[in-house]
Image (cartoon, rainbow, N blue to C red; front, side, top):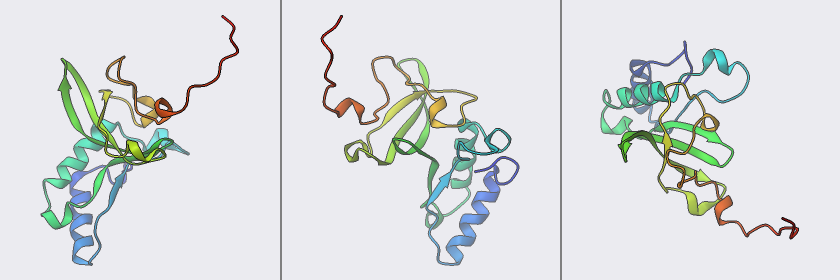
Amino acid sequence: MVRYVNDDSAVWAHMWQRMVELGIHPYYAFVERDTGARNYFAIPLTRALAVYQGALRQVSGLARTSRGPLMSATPGKVVIHGESHVAGRKVFVCSFLQARQPDLVGQPFFAAWSPTATWFDELEPAFADCPFPTGSETAAPQETSGRG
């Protein structure tokens, strides 16, 4: 999903409908990657979610196979399922569709809602006691030098 190119629900809906007509199953709706001219082409994740959900509402079930908005970040493919309120806070509801740590796949987690974040590394955990699952919390404890 690229600003000034296809950041419009009608464009995505038309593309998905055409894909289905051609026998192609829509798969992922990636957001602009955090490389190159991203400052020009990136859109806020909240906008990407609105575009994606708006497109879903315009197509039949056959064209609703695409998952997104999606980011291929370092820990894995992160999908934003929606926005919600949890414990009085507005959050993004996320999960990994694929992950370097297979046990993280499908586990929901919450990111603090942001009107400006355009990539996973700009998101923060919604709650201090619930860090993002990255697999590091399942790694063996690091040995310390014994100082301090």
